[in-house]
Image (cartoon, rainbow, N blue to C red; front, top):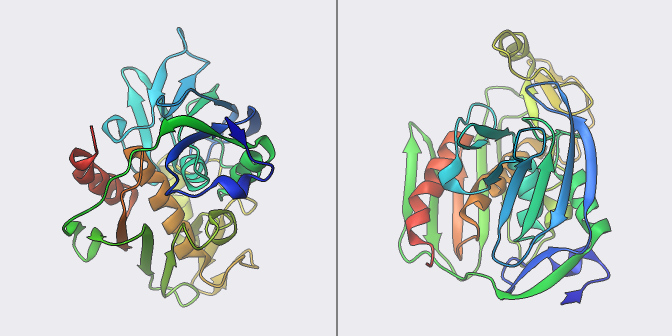
Length: 291
């Protein structure tokens, strides 16, 4: 195995070899929707084991693979389940692991929901960099898209097109002047996930907050872990990027598509999509995965 001295040197998503963490790390925080405190620990895992969750608070410590066939509900977050065990709001951590090139990891947590931390993937990326990354002997699956594939709902869609390299592009359009129409592209081979995508925080609309809380959602959300926008503008500036909202949506897409286990060589384009549409699209791609 080869350990890198700097995590960012080993994040190439087109690498031929699988990677895992050099050392475990632990973080404590609250869940976005539950508001409950949770302790989460990420550990190295053998080649070929993939990324998977372990509910340490449940009898027999059930494991939940981070795979597309384990997706449950997708209302304002992505939930995975296996039997009676579930884990919620997995997308930011999975985006950080996959965006940093971590193929294999055991994720232990003592509650239902992954902690939100600051609302972005940056704290997870920093933990991965501090832990270090090691290359493993097994090759990483390589696959490509040979014809366009699209899923849509109204004017929202996610599509993949044949390409020479992996690329993500995302567009959003909100009827709020402070957000409006935004676009962002990210090429893993050319731009750092840690600097370009990871810092973008989750965001919400001020006028929707009370309704969502009445529905039992976003109990752990606050101005410290989410951007909030009203008709009059951002309630808690400054933004980390002028188009931080669309960068966060791209972050969510990376996390949801990581449930495939490996990204295809393709240009993946999304517009006004949701976790539901992201995961429906991943399910369409899943049969194309190499066996």
